[in-house]
Image (cartoon, rainbow, N blue to C red; front, side):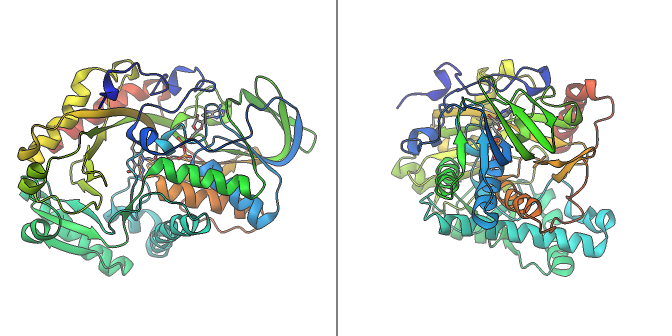
Length: 457
Ligand SMILES: Cc1cc2nc3c(=O)[nH]c(=O)nc-3n(C[C@H](O)[C@H](O)[C@H](O)COP(=O)(O)OP(=O)(O)OC[C@H]3O[C@@H](n4cnc5c(N)ncnc54)[C@H](O)[C@@H]3O)c2cc1C
């Protein structure tokens, strides 16, 4: 089996959105395990090369853009065009870990009620449960075969000192949100999941699950096109301007005139895309390895029986799971500078995390390695809103690395909002704050990561 990490990094990361260049044009899917196992990429409508009019034009062909397009077309009868710079699913939607759990943004649960009030926090919590429902109904609507894995996502205390935090969250989830998570001890984990040197307790989110992320993106692409949406690959948007009562959205070969524009570019949002979005996001690299399959002995020694998704309790956390073909996927924080993404230390860091958790798997080697840009807003929660001066230019951005369910769900909320039904929770339906001292975002990131290293020990 080839080591995908040794192949040239075509389309893998290719640029830093903060450095102002575009995301590329017509780049192929990265050499990921997902791309190798998804089957043929479904048809799309090719390069956008003829001017046309539409009700809504969507920039970005990931979960957010495709879900918004599908729901607009299906529920509101809108004429929708999706413009994707590369191929649909090329961004995070085709590269992520496929781990799905209730979760929105990066604000610690214990701070929710202080930040949004009792009712606001509960509304946001319920919205994240609805997000899981949206994923499941999309899968059902499209009969999407995306390798659904064992239900229940574990957050595992990687050291004894983290057990108390899990117990506090367990209580808070129950008392404040009426959510029945389960607290497992080390024995439960060993009995039902695996034997690990870094598993001292776990919080189990019963409705979490895992999918093949690219198959899911491809399924939503098929759904959108089936509902009448035009989805164009290799059609990077270079900008837009007001045009009569709507907007003219430009690509290298043609333009779309539409009443509404939706920006669905998340971590790939270039600082140069539009002045109103400049300095609003911090793209952060996240990377993943997939190992060769475990042998029967390796599997036996770790008793790795479950394919449920797992994350540890580090600030810069590692997430992992056993894939259906007995490989291990391990993901975590990547480098700060995209030019170093192929340096062996980044693969070694993930492999090291795997060895620390599962010493009997020390012989596993890497078959696939890739990375992508997740999106951090300054206030650590996603924003599903419109530009201040342009109420018909919408965006859903800033998923903070937990975006599978939120992106699909907020895409559908935006569709309903544009279609006339205003049901976006107040915590999310707000303008995106600008980063203070935005020119120093990367420096701030270095400080933040050093702090994580210190806290994680
Ligand atoms: C390595 C990794 C692991 C992850 N693991 C998980 C996980 O396990 N669970 C989870 O919940 N989340 C995870 N995430 C996050 C999740 O994948 C994302 O939050 C989600 O996919 C965002 O979807 P999106 O459609 O908003 O953006 P994307 O899927 O990133 O799509 C944005 C698209 O916009 C396009 N684009 C950018 N600029 C332009 C332009 N000017 N014109 C046209 N197109 C443009 C890009 O080419 C890209 O395809 C992970 C992310 C990464 C990188």
